[in-house]
Image (cartoon, rainbow, N blue to C red; front, top):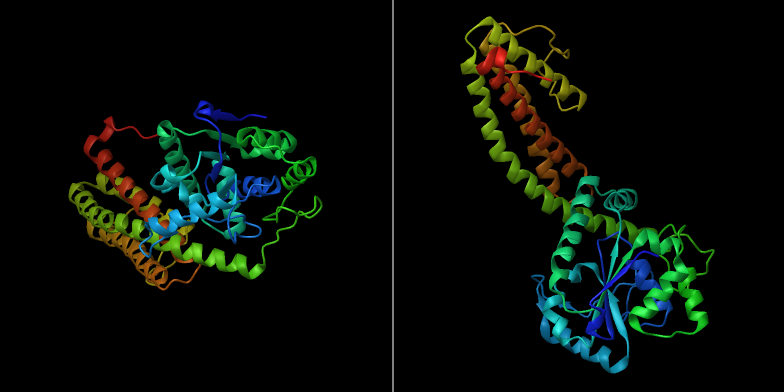
Length: 368
């Protein structure tokens, strides 16, 4: 089974933290460790196998005093213990010096598989899941260069294929010798056909998701509110200045039109944009005849009006989507519309730039 251990020479591991992107397989490894007899926390989640000794303040920062108390309590009660809480990777260096013989297990998974899993399970937009997973992976890759502790890297796909070998690798990394029954239970827990979260002592044929429907709905809603707020703000902050810049580009293009040929070039690109908006259902047809223009515009004024109408459609979509996001619906509908408005605005700006170059350089400008 493919894996690697870094910094083995830094000694034995008695406190292990499992890290990796969300939907990346950390729950499987944490559950496997539980089956092997490693205490993975106090009052931890039954089937997500999550718990953290880190106590967070209201502002999200680590409250060190109760965190250290949790660590001391675990040290006093268990010769080998650990936890899984993916976001703790961003704070681990604040408490690593207080951990007894720390080591880390990093679970890696193909980014596309992670994003598809998030889309299927919680309807998270693919591009956001991809970015979130890549951000966590990049952070870990950047920090491990300076982590002076043993680190085991386990590919999730390999773990599912070779469960018995995975168990032996985990035992060797932690230098533990669980009974044969525990080893078999750990191996049977890591099932490639698992359809969701499972308790560590689930039977081999219990492959269904043990998550109660309401819990899953609540988790999905909270995640949607959080991601919509964060990415909605980012998209809005990109939309507003780009919108102003695009309006300026429209006027610049209109000023360049001094001949029928230049008007024909501008007409062509505006018609292309009109068709794009219609295919994306972003065209405001309330004040139009409902049919795409197939002939050239008769004047700069008419062309300006057509482009500005497209831009106003985007502005309306963005404004309404932003209001929906602010109302915390727990769905991604508003965020998806805002994202699409931003994408179309980027397309408009680029298309206008291409039109300007065609008019300025004439025959020297070649299009594909």
